[in-house]
Amino acid sequence: MEAPKRRFDSKITNLNNQYIQEQQEQEALAKHQRFVRRVHRRRLLFLGVLVLIFAALLGNQWLRSQRTQRTLQANIAVQQQKLKKAQQQQEDLQIQVDQLHDADYLDKLIRYKYDYSKKGEVIFTLPDNEGQTTSSNPKN
Image (cartoon, rainbow, N blue to C red; front, side):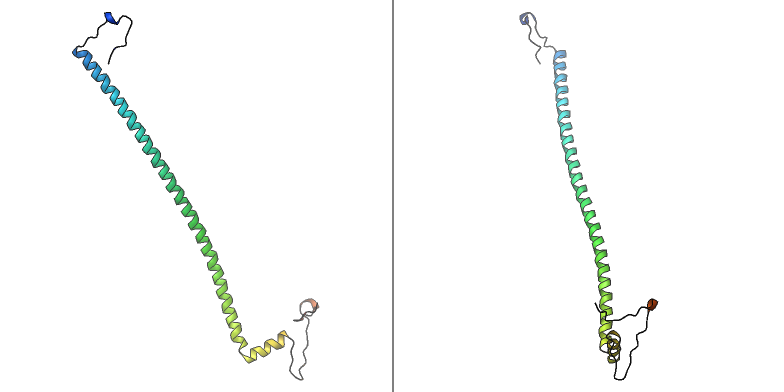
């Protein structure tokens, strides 16, 4: 390293002895080490930022997948309940179909629902709740 130039450079000379050379080498080495540390800090900061971004993206994806899984589990539970209701309704309808194939049951159903009667049979309608009569075929 050169000393700063002054107005009276002709009167000032640099000593080029071993001590000055060692000092210049130490200064150059210290300057290089500062440069290397600065470069390493920048690289480490850059890698840290990359790791944080990567972790944030993975965390976000994981949270989305957890939310989707909970939604799907809730939908599955609702659909299973609907399926059970539909299966129960199908069983009830199958029982009704089987009963409709029975002539005695069909005869009773028609007589009750449509107030059908056999020849010579009289149907009496009795009042139910609080003296009101109920009819299976209400007239509007």
